[in-house]
Amino acid sequence: MTEQQLPAWADPSVPPAELDAQGVSRRGILRGAGLFGAAFALGGAATAPAAATPAAASPGRALGGEDPRLAYLVGDHHVHSVYSHDAKYTFSQLAAAAARYGLDWMVFNEHSNFGHARYGAAMEHQEILKARAENPRQLIFQGLEWYIPAAEHCTVFAAPGPHEVDVLTQFELAYDGKLLKYTDGAPDNPNTARNEAHAVKGIKWLAEQRRTGYVDDVLVLANHPMRLGIDSPHEMRNWRDAAPEVMIGMEGAPGAQGGGIPGWEGPDSQRGEYTNKPSADSWAGYPQNAYVLYGGFDWMTATVGGMWDAMLAEGKLFTVTTNSDVHRVVFDTWKNGDWPPGTTFDDTGRLPDPVNTDSPQPGGDFWPGQFSRTHVGVTRYGYRSVMAGLRAGRVWLDHGHLLDGLEVRLTREGDRGRGVTLGGRLRVRRGEKLTLSVTVTTASRANPWGILPELAHVDVIRGAVRGPVSDRDAWRAPDTKVVRTKDVSGRTGTYSLRVPLTAGDESFYVRLRGSDGKRHGPGYLGASIDPHGPVPHEPGNGDPWADTWFYSNPVFVDVVG
Image (cartoon, rainbow, N blue to C red; front, side, top):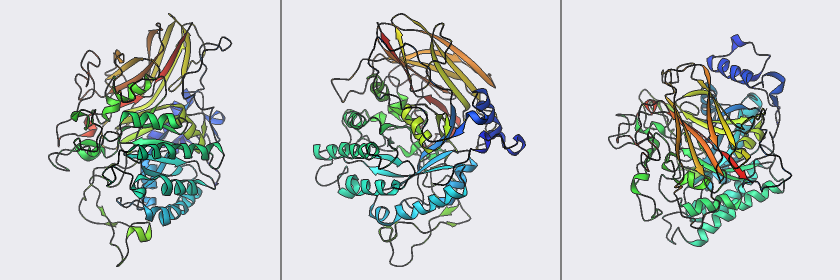
């Protein structure tokens, strides 16, 4: 593979005068983390992946933790191009947009279908290889949007290597629900045990390709899980448990965030294009008001004590992300090109190039990195480092460029070490005093909409870890709630918050959330659990730039002795 190069903001040979405002800010964060220059190097895998389940208590194992210092790379794992049958933009248009909005990594996960499997995947791979050679500062993954048998969609992507296309194509043909007619709405009943079992079998197959070294790495993330309500709790748990080193999480917030811009898509439009109602194919246990976004985030993630927390309460990491899901960008003037006579996507695996017009075209998406950003903590710069960071849960996400930086550490009282960070586990004794240290770097420049974002509050959310559930369709975590809110209105630059915590009798986790404070109210499960959480917007009146949030992955605390 073409030799990688450090991004300009991390390369000490690039003078500060040649960086844009974002590059200067990120270099400052990198320097502050003690990683600037030779310490932040090119490489493959970062540190060893975090355990998928709580570490067993061992008398010989030291308490506490010592996670490395991190730099955060910004990316998007859900990008569609002309190699998807329902998208519009060329590969080069999207890569240029990603660079313009400061992305370090991105995944082209095209929709599965026979045209893609037969022609499109191989053609796109040649474009990706060329782009990697011409711009080695940008990490470009190839992936697939998998139609899960009996459920919704997933991003599947592999590390670069000689078999990255082969493994995706083999998987697409053997396990894709749409190609096999194992999807919801299929005549033979989409929710049969056979179809659900086939999804689990597909994830296990991917794990085997990784285990045997056919590919260096492969990851799976569930996309827009509540858009149709067909990803049941037991299915999500089954996917995770089939191979937790591969099936690592879900979109905490979907793409298509421009769908709610007032006056753009219609009076009933919603952010994320979450305009569905429960259907015969939906899991019956989801309430009807779970089918819209809350502060731009999926109900599963936005509900304190809801589905995401129910999975974390088992003591198992499940990472959340956000992304563009770009198909058609708001206010863009490009339209799809015309097909040559007698040709279709199944014949070619690729749409005709788009054509520019003089008028805005329909669309509810943003460019990669324009609005939604997933930040992944790494110690090295490279493809496998990004994948290792995602697997380890070293992830936080924001909308509208709300923050420039976020650093989280949990330490034992009196411990002078670095403790553990997002996705990590800290082993402590009952009754020990802990300190949650949160370092915030506020936005230093206007976002792509011309707004200088301002963070209003930081919420600390704590939940008990009780282990595996007996009811695998349970979506409540009744012992999870907001335990502390810090008002940070008016604070700028880089500052630190210190939150004291005490270990009780049982293990627990903590995670963070915050917003610009412009739209909130009692959380979905009530003010006693979440006094000022995200709320849905009125149909047709959901300006995403006026309701921005950040979320972090959890830190686990294993109480022993």
